[in-house]
Image 1: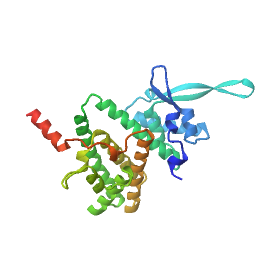
Image 2: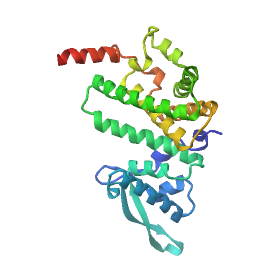
Image 3: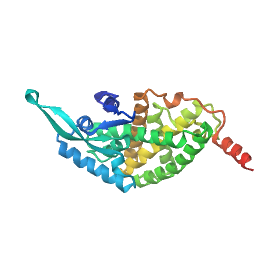
Image 4: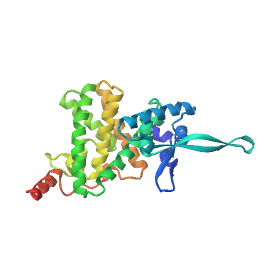
Length: 275
C-alpha cells in the first residue's frame, strides 16, 4: 500500500487553521497526532530540534513557533489547560525534517511541507517578476542544484555518463508519470539539439527544482549507495512531488504549456536590452 492510499491526501491541509490576522498555522498537538507521536514529550523533543535548526539558520524561532495553551475536556465536564504551539508552515517543515524517518507519514510530510515551503519562498521572491524573469531565475537556480545533484549521485555510485542519464530518467519518470527525457522532448515538439529544461515555464521548472533539491538531500541524508538504489530514490522523490501536485489540484507537468521562447532566446533578449 503506497503512502497516499493509506493516508488522506489532504491530511496536512485538513488540520491547517487560520488566525484572526488571516495567517495560516498548525497546532503542534494536531500535528503530533497526524505524525503518529503517541507521547507528547517525544514530540516536544522533535520541536526543540526544529527550533534549534531554525536558530542555526539565523531565523528567530519565536517567529515560527508560538508557545500557547490549549483547553481540553476531561471526565465529568472538567477542563484542563495543556501546552501547545502555533506552528508556521516553515516550522512544520523543520519538524518533519527532524522527525522519525522510519514512518511513512513522515516521508509524506517531508514532501508536502518541502514543496509548499519552497513554493511560498518562490512566491515571495518572484511575485513582482514577469513570467520571463521567473523562468530565468528558476532555471539558473536549477542549473546550480543539478550540479549538486550530480555530485550526490556520483557519491552514491552513479559514475559513468550513461548511468547518470539513466539516473536522470528515473527522476523524470517519477515526476512525469512514466515519461522519460526523450518522451518529454518529443511531447514538447523540440529539435534534437534543444534542452527540455530550457523549454519549460516557471511552474514546470519549479516542480523540477523540487525534484532535484529533494533527491540530493535524500541521497546525502540517507547515505544511499549503489546505482539501483540511487535510481529508485530519484524515481520515488519525483513521484512524491507529482503526488503532491495532484493533491493540491495542480496541472501535471507533462500537461503544462511549452513557452514560445526558450531560455536561450530570453537571455539574448535580455542582453540586447542591456546593450
